[in-house]
Length: 489
Image (tube, rainbow, N blue to C red; front, side, top):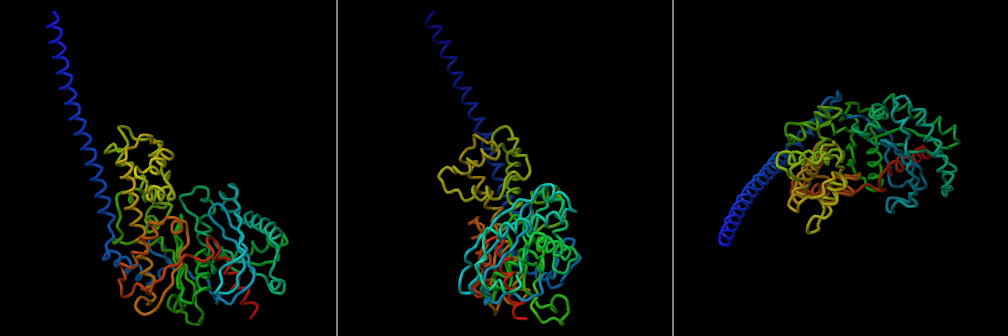
């Protein structure tokens, strides 16, 4: 009897071992198939996103050609808008100045002291004011917005007493800049259409100037706004304050835009005004067959609020980089079970991955990608990611960030090429925005791409600098140039 039990047990044990071996082989094969699919998706993403030096030159040349054409009809092409006709700063302006930077859902009040081009901005004070949702959602609430700005500015001035005695004897100008409001942000959808049309020659801009100045008068603010301009115009003014070789300013945040210096006859064929003209170039609208688009870009564009438009912006700006990464991760989760047999529900939520979180994961240097693990838990409720899966996440971030940064570099080269400054003149380009300020790897890819495109012979002619004074500070330099102009007219 005992022998029969032992034999039966042995047979059962053998069957169990065989069954376990079969299961393990099946599991390994399934796991191998999944990882092969993950790698296949990753390789395809890298191939479609490739930005060779030749391709970048094609993008730069086509952008330069579109600028030369000076198209103003919108659509998929860039638009060249005359944005600022007054003299830019010379670096001789000194004193205390105020500015306003109007953003998507808030505005920034600034006060700073300038002491000449050889000295940094000092005594810089900033205050951020949230715009109530009721105002943001109503496209006809401009007057209420201006009243709020006037009220908050009067409070700000009373808290920061004027220390520049010279200011009491001159007409005080306030610089006013507008940052591009992102269309994907529903909180700013109501008034965004108005803000996007603002320029110094625009009727909407002139109406806003009148309403702002009326609000200032109502609240006892002894200042006047001369024009409402894009924030990149202010950044360009800040760059020109410190260097006469500054020719363009790029904004790289949630959205993106560019302003550059051009002579009027080159853009408008109107040589009557010999002064330098600042052009607000909405390069986010740039589109080309040379842009390295992927299936994820195509689906993102189709599901956006403005399909077919702002293609370049959807490849390079902070609003969209994280969303592209999320879409890749979602495909890997659906087709290759990157995060387990079930797709994490939160991974299906559009725009849930923000560019700062993408940057944090991309720049994770810990051995087991601990930052990536933390972000996956925090954003997508993914609690059991493997080190291999987390490594894949960083590789996706790298591909998406590298493509975006290198395309920005190509765009900068295109602008300098159009201006005829690549081969024989120094050109300083200032860049401002969270994507450039805080995403170190993105910034490094951008700089290296300009060097790669231009090579050793010409790369030293293009100098990329961070904007002076930080976010919104361009309004200070505009105020200085206008005040200085009136004092000497």
